[in-house]
Image (cartoon, rainbow, N blue to C red; front, side, top):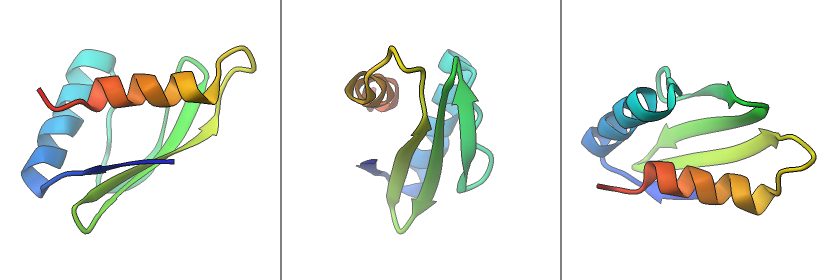
Length: 76
């Protein structure tokens, strides 16, 4: 699990950025998304975005998945 502190405006901007750059659409403040065999659940509550890995291909490490998520969500 990884967490990111975000204001509501930052969460909205982050969700838009993920959709535009990665094709990942966060619908609402919680849900489940998948891309290329990687599935994670997300929840935005109390100024914190929490991402939890649910499924991944066996040849990809958990650490790699979380590093990619961190890179995609990095504030620009």
